[in-house]
Image (tube, rainbow, N blue to C red):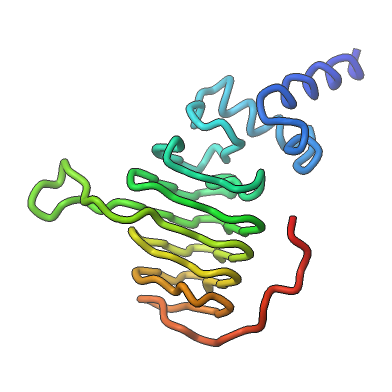
Length: 180
C-alpha cells in the first residue's frame, strides 16, 4: 500500500511540477510544497513550487530561463512582479529575499509606477535578507551580500555587492562552477 501511494504521489507531482523538479527536489520535500499550494491553496496561482511562508505576486510576469531557481522557493520570500522579473540560469535565491519590481506612485498609493523589469543574469547569488528594488539589472556572476538593499544596477557583473544601499565591495573572476 505504501509503495502504491508513493508511486501515485510521484506521478501527480511529475504532472504538476515536471519530472526534472521531482528528481531535483525529491518527493518528500516536494510533497510539502504541493500540499500547501494545491490542497491548502497558498500560492496556488504559481506553477512552480513555492514555500508556504513566501508570497509570489504576478507570477505570469516572471521569466525563468531554467527550472532552477524558483522565486519564492525559500522561506519568507516576497516576490512582486508587476513590472516583470527576468531570472537567468544557475541563480541562487536565499531565504527572506524580497524582489519588488514596482513601487507605489507617491501621488496615488493605489497606482504603481512603470519601470523596467528587474533582470538577474546567470550565476548570481542573492544571500539571505536581500531586497532588490524596481528596475535593477544584476550582471552575470553578481553576489549580493546578506541584508543588502539593491536600488541601482550593477550590469558589469563579476562582483560582490552589499550594504544599504548596495555598493561595490569587490570585483571577482568569472564563474567557474557547473551550470545547473
